[in-house]
Image: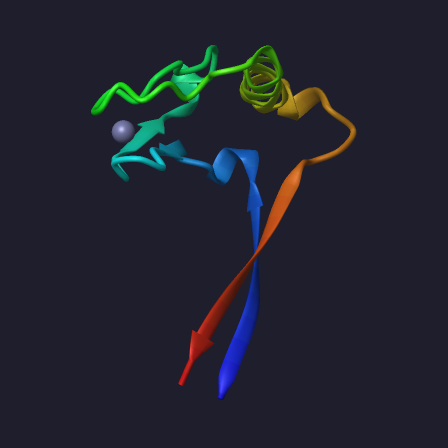
Length: 90
Ligand SMILES: [Zn+2]
């Protein structure tokens, strides 16, 4: 029997954003204090992660946007939450 639960995560709950390299599977974790730029290549195998201006814009926008909302959360009229499914099979 599968049990599905929903996790609701707020920005203050996030400990790190993680980037996993598709090539070597190493993981880079960035704590909120480091949410200000983008990592252009894998720090382990040096595979290029940011390879087009569109990817650069999207990655930079989401990271800096999350940092802005986190830093200003107390003054916002809303709270941003992420919902994630968690499945367990018995
Ligand atoms: Zn890599």
